[in-house]
Image (cartoon, rainbow, N blue to C red):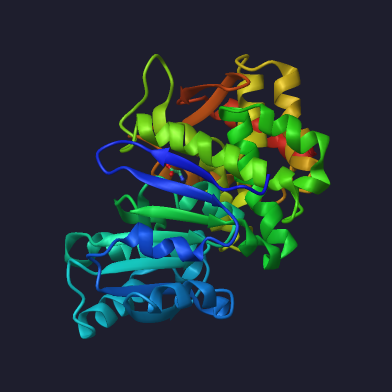
Length: 368
Ligand code: GLY
């Protein structure tokens, strides 16, 4: 699949997610003619990779390029403040725009800067990782981390467009690409089982940036996310028992605790793989999920080399961290679980025994 696919995100502020190759030239069309100045917020180590984007912008706009420290630990108020100061010095107005170029941390932080500057200016995301393409760049969630946890400060601010240029994945380190598949495979379980068939049939193709298999996986995962956010942009809840946008947090309650316990050295997609395997076991031992579907979690994540057995952190620490995670409501822990493939629901307040026994099974090295 080398053609360009356009996924339309409807709603009050509609926009397109374009998936293809060599897309930088589409930026001026998406930003529009009213924009005068553009702040290109890019992950600092991606200078060379960002050149086509810079070239496409300087031909039409007054461009300020700001290299940001990359990674989850740099997604903080201090770096956001540096951006606000730079926008202020350059006299950025409401008719100016932000373009982000980088992984999920850059699109989250850059999106938040755009959401907060003058209460919101246009932003276009150009994600450079699988993870950012299928998750962070789409759906309008922006934010930064605080000492108490991930994404605790943020805003909903939908982009004016998202360009997922698959050529950018050619230079992505193999382990980063693999980690991104954690979110892709999650989408297979919550909504599109064809993703699981594709990954299991060709795990090598799934990890090859030049392969049509990866292109199809990325496109399918984005479509899952688009469908979810169109129905429940602000995560207020779904219809007919569907969790709504919260479904995207499948595996994330434990994943965020694992990331924090490791001081973010465990990659997000790796933590999501572990979190999904854990929550599948939780649902299996609660009698909600059939054994074979629970066991498929370890198969699907494991076939591309993602971790499926917990060895990060101790239960007490992970449990305590999960409780302060924003997915806990009141004093109850909430988990998105499956009662079948692509059939998600919420499990609220599982017993301590159930939580612990699922952890013990995963620690022992495999679900089911
Ligand atoms: N990353 C989860 C969401 O966008 O809701």
